Length: 265
Image (cartoon, rainbow, N blue to C red; front, side, top):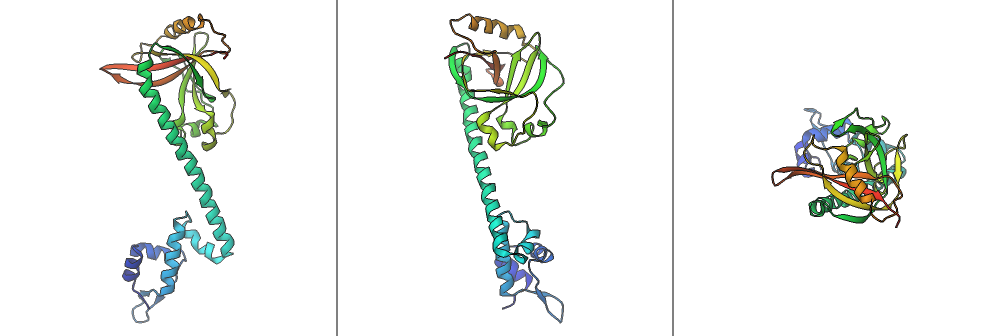
């Protein structure tokens, strides 16, 4: 049984242009009528196109389908399916981590306003910190993220996992991008110089409001840190601050930051 191009297109729910593209890629080679040179497609062409459409759903490029069918078929198909399974596994891992991250950020926003000014002990997850920029109060220097990781840290895939941290230096605030170590496996971030690894630890924490942009002064944080460190705990590391969220609340712009001081459990 022979079919015209519009008939085979209707059966396969494809456009005529797409069928011609499959032909250009060598997937099918329809016969032509002698009287008018029109293409005609037979049942074998239908089977071949249907198989090719199925392969395309496993991320096999249309231009590669002819090569897959022309060489060691079973070996080539096995590789296609293995590659697809690996891609799906990586995508599922990323989606699972994105869901976990979204829940984490949701909880952070919901609880931040409720806990302003409250001192608490929290278990802080392990982080890898990448240097970002230095600042004094709300004045920032040039971004200093290492060039070898800058494209990945600023990619659409990685940005949702980044947290803003800073430490108070000698008159200079040191900002970093922090990514929890449990997420690193799905982000493919290479090692580089100047990174800092922080293991899971207990911290004495307090959330404060930094206020409007331009209002923040380092002394505000230092005063809070001094008060926390006067409490009866054994401190085992440098204080750091995590930017939790920012936005307008009842007409006032808030920037909420959590002070974290490592303590001995």
